[in-house]
Length: 151
Ligand SMILES: [Zn+2]
Ligand SMILES: [Zn+2]
Image (cartoon, rainbow, N blue to C red; front, side, top):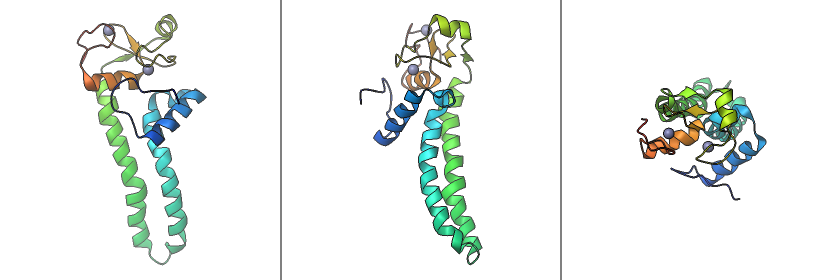
């Protein structure tokens, strides 16, 4: 296990293992959203287990099952989505997506040194993974490369 998160708060060890496993798969869909999908995926296991237990009881206690479905399924999804939105989207909304040409000229993320498939460009034209840039901006309003104020 040599993969280390360069800056900021690390997710719990289990999540990090799954995240780096997903990175190794190089699935583009997970490129930017892995921090949202991994906790959701882990949650899905718990949810499926509780559905399996609750399904036979649904006809006997439908209201109880509705409440259980809300607390186990809907509420965590809404919560995670809201958490993701505030942490990720609101910080990064002001930055544009890098073009394919920019990415091929600078194919490495300066924060984690991994390959960029999708990148966020700062006003100073430095490219980062959205997640890496967000982690840096949580600690400091400066561009990690040129130290211009970008937040
Ligand atoms: Zn990165
Ligand atoms: Zn910069």
